[in-house]
Length: 242
Image 1 (cartoon, rainbow, N blue to C red):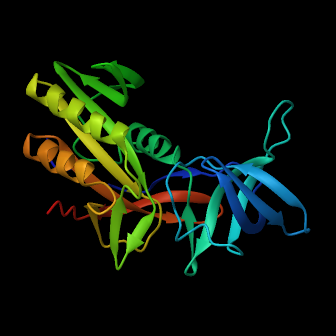
Image 2: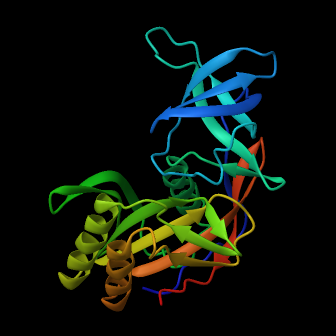
Image 3: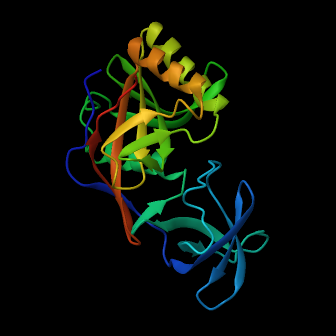
């Protein structure tokens, strides 16, 4: 597959309204406690299982989408956190929305031959994020959320991911069977200059990503601009697998 890169503006608006507060603590993987600007203590859903210890610092400003839906256990979704003077998205669901928006808007080169997109399609016992189809062509696509950046390098994952490693192996098998495969990392902040697998956090994933790339799976990474209105794909950054 040809290298993929962004062409033109592509983004997704955040659900509105967003409300502000400050991070207090994380009682479990998918919940956080915050203090609102009015001084109210709230428990929010955290749509991200990563560690994010550098972001989830007591007192850090946050933005969340409130929800008082009947039967809901939390008061809304935590979406953005302020870190070193910039907003960072902590919504691990966002990469799928970004890929869909970019694909439908023709903003990613390298995918022009595909005309149909299906989400959550079964492959080898798993579900892959997207299956793209076109005349005589199929391409399996996995998207990943990245929000850890150290000294200009975006790193994924920040905790071991057996599921992520399995998906890479399945993409590699799909390519060996004659299909195409791609994994796209959306860096949900704008200060990354390059991307690399986080070998210290998960050496198996790093090895699997290198093996998948060597077998023909396309690996791309895009940094994003994040603000309280929207998240926008900016440009492609180099991928360093070594």
